[in-house]
Image 1 (cartoon, helix red, strand yellow):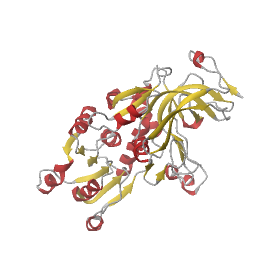
Image 2: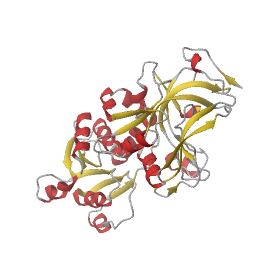
Image 3: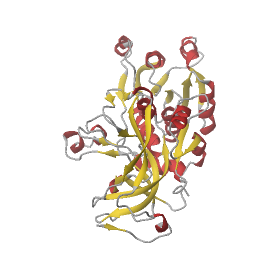
Image 4: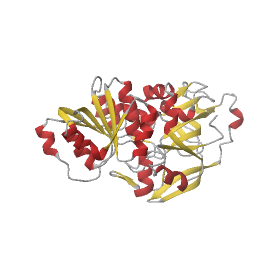
Amino acid sequence: MVRAIYTPFSHLLPKYSGVDMKSYVIYGPKDLRIEERQERELEADEVRLGLAYGGICGSDMHYYQEGKVGHSVVKEPMVLGHELTGVALEIGQNVNDVSVGDKVAISPALPCGTCDMCLQGDENVCFNMKYLGSAAKRPHTQGAFEERPVVKSRQCVVIPVDADLKLAALAEPYAISLHAVNLGEVASKRVLVFGAGTIGTLAAVAALSEGASEVYVADIQQAALERARELADIQAINANDLQSQISSGELPYFDVVIEASGAPQAFNTALAVLIPKGRLIQVGFLAPAELDMNMVLTKEITIRGAYRFLNEFDKAVTSVLANPKLASAVSATYEFGVAEEAFDASLDKQKHLKVMLCNNEYNS
C-alpha cells in the first residue's frame, strides 16, 4: 500500500505497475549503458522520487574509466549515482516525514545501525554499510541515476519549496568535504588543500566556513585553481612550486593539509610542507606508491583517513543552500539519458568542476 497526496506534482505521477524507466548501468571499464529497467513496488519505509539533478562523482568516473574504485570492483551490472535531488512522487505506508510533492536532497548512506561501529557512533565506517552506487559489497548497492529512483525515507532531507535543486545536489560532496575539514580541526589554522577537483574545492570552502585562518589550494591545473578562487577567498598555488616555496621561506609551513587529489606525490609533498605535529587528512583514494613514512615519524605527524561523512549531511544541505555562489561549481548539465558525452566531459578538468545530469521533468 502507498499513500499519494495530490499536489501540484500529482500530474507527474505515472502508473507504476510494469513501468520501465531509463537507468545508467555500468558493466565494466568504458561499458556504460542506458537501459530500461522496470520499477518495483515500494516497501513501507520507502519513497519514489522523480530525479531532478544527479551529480557525476569522482567515484562514478572511476567506475566508468576503470571499472573500480580502490578495492571496489564492478563484478555485476550496477546502476551508478549517489549525488542527487528530486521530487517525492510516491510514499510508503509508514512514511510520515516526507509528503508527495516535497523537494528532497538524498543522503546516499544506509548504515546498518546494529554493528559495533554504528553502536559507537561511527556509522560512516559501518561494517554493513550500503551506499548508493557502490560495488564495495556483493550484491552491489544499486545507485540512483534512474528516472524514478527509490530510496528510504530516512535518506531524504526535505528542502524548501523554493530551493534550488541543482544547488542542493552539491550537498553530498560538500558533506564529504566537511567531514575531512572536521577531522582536521581547522579553526584558526593555516590549511592547504591538495587537488582543486570537487571535493578539494568544497573542502577549501568548508575550511573557511569552519574558521580556518588561511586556506590555500594546490593543483597542477591552472584552470582548476581559477575556478576554486571564484568560489571563496581561497589562495591558489601551483602544486609544482609548493615545496620550493616552503623550503625558500617564501611560504610558511601549514598546520593542516587535506589531501584530495589522490596523487602519491601530493601525499609526500604534504608531509614536507606540514609543520611538525601537523595533521594530514587523506580524503582522496591513493594509487599504490612509495610513501615517505619516515617523515611521519620525524615530524610526529598525525594522519587521518576521511571516508564519506558521519553526521554532516544535514548541515551540508543547509550550507550549500545558503551559499548561492556555489552554483557556479556546476560547470555543465546534460539531459538525462546522455551517457558517454556527460561522463567524458566530467573527465576534462581543464573545462569542468562538476557535471550533472538533469531531468527536465522534475527539476523546476
